[in-house]
Amino acid sequence: MASSPGALVPTATCLFTQDELPPDTRIEHTIPRALGGRIRSRIVSSNEFNNRCGAHVDPYLIRRYAEILCLLGPMMSAEHTPGNLSVEIPGSTGRFVLDPIGTITIQGIDVQARDPVTQRPTAVAGAELSAVRRWIRRNAPAGAHIRESSVPATTEAEFFTNRLVLGPVIEIAVLKSALLSFDHLLADDVARRFTRHASLRPIREFLRDAVTTLEYDGADLSRFSLGIQYDRLDVLERIRRRVPGARQAFEHTLIASGNAATSTLDCVFLVAGIDPYGFRLASDWDGGDFLCTVVTGILRNGEVSGPIWDSLPENICGPTNFRSFPGHEDEAVMARAVAAMSERWEDGLRRATDLVERSSRDMLIERITTTARLAVGGDQTIGTACRERLRRLYLRRREEDQAEFDRTLDESLASVAEILGTAVHEDRMPAIDWDRVVDAYYLTLDRVSSNWGLPGEVTESTHVIGTDDRGSGRLDDHTLSL
Image: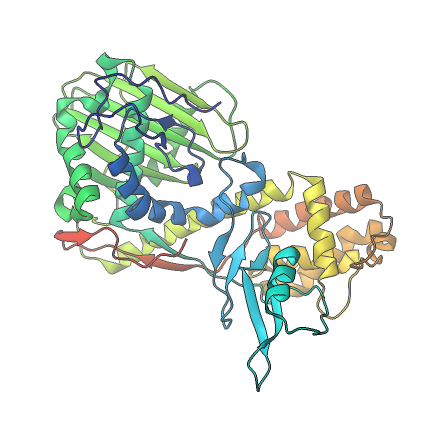
């Protein structure tokens, strides 16, 4: 279940601005809802601070993982389903979106042809038939003959997303979310509510100023943000195993560690189980030794587990090259860091694709029949639809050995060859033994995965914002379309 917003007390103040929070303070998700955030609070941040984060900071973090969360949509609760994600298709001027079942569709209504003389639309397309019909009723000339047909939104298999991979605004968004989450969950434990400790005043003021002015100081960010901690994933996993309760394939893990011997307080936020962002919250920590862990599920029926306490600190993070200000001028090192981040992200995308592909037989049947109905060239058989879907899931990797890939499909689907020849038409659905088809499809996916890895492909369009000039910068100076 999701975290309770908590009872508002007269002394509740914003963690960063110190503004008192009146009774009508709005409930916010400390981790953005579009990332599956389940911790809801009205006792940790002001409406104004929350609004500025939602408008200028959080979108960059959300977009970083939006495609993965979009693909996970069918396995998320209605509250957290992110909806469609805008994508770009090479060579196309149309507007397209990736929907939660992994299909590229047209965004809105697209005018595809006009009369050369009058310039009135003669052909329009859209993903929702009812919306297209309403548009035609409003715009078609009186007495016009109207024909309807179903066609694929695009025949292209590649699409692009526009997002930051690495940038100050992402690190600030992650840090802010981590502190707000801990602050809410520890609100009733004043003695251990480290987020309000005096030694964290510099980082609280840094975040306050960054969100208020939308400018950041690079030197301060370099001091607080230690980078992504891939080299400590084994340590983080060991700590995660101490948290009781059901585990989900995708979840957020937050860990804070206070160390009296080193006078440090560090924090790691493992976002969606993919990227562990590390931060030095304080360098003059005098609040004793502790380890505090919180896990919050992302998928349907996920829960917030913790805080779980341990009296012994752990070495959970240290400075890495996986951050906006690594402290050196070496483009090759930065390029390797971004490549490693992209590889980790692609692994998350493929795990999400595989999880959802296998999660619902009914959804798979819907996908196969839709592919068959919209088949280019008129081959609307179930077999062609199964092969086309698998080929799209392995867009780039199968091209290295297309013949072997196709041979694997043929061999694995041979047991249901007599069914795969059945055609699916718009106006009728023939009787099909779907249990046999789905079983054969999953067997084929198992065989393909053993040779080509997990399904899921994307050609990235990314931006990396990082510099060794530790001056000030704007948080919102990048064009980003959600």
